[in-house]
Length: 250
Image 1 (tube, rainbow, N blue to C red):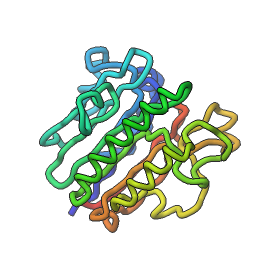
Image 2: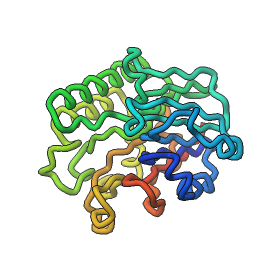
Image 3: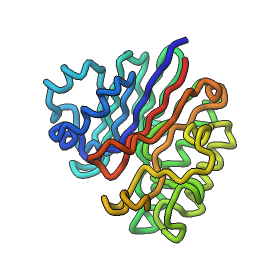
């Protein structure tokens, strides 16, 4: 068995984070895998010198536009297979990637915000239901699901209980069902009720601890006892989201 460190971060523009050297503070932690959401770019537009210097294999998914979405998965070990969807090809618009390794599979996701209109909320719920279908079929395997879910699961995961964003009953029920399949919120293995957040509207809200926990590592039941730690890297600045880190023995 060996220890595996995974960091997931909604960077809100990866090229900006690289230019400002904010990505350096994550790479200096020497993770085996780094998952970036909301990259707002494609592989073709990345600085090739940075990619070569990073020492990682990298897999990019474009977002819906240059201003929204996008995933990048950086990994030291090359996956056996990389798939760009959960269930249907429509999931591939910069929102979902499945990386199959020798000992486990990693689902990297960035859920739609679902704000503004009922149609956008329905789009988000459909996306999350596709995740549930995948998770139900794969629940007996060694699976890690990571990324920005854009959902605050329970009251301890959000400062403002009256918000209509990320905290609807329908969204929260999705995560309830995910747990009913045996998937475990790794952060809550070590922090049962503590109010720690990963996302804030602005710097003032961050300083006042007025945010929401929207970013997660869920692990299948078979991996629960192998999780060594899971924490929020709140000292890393740059984005409105903080990175999250999982250390697991595989």
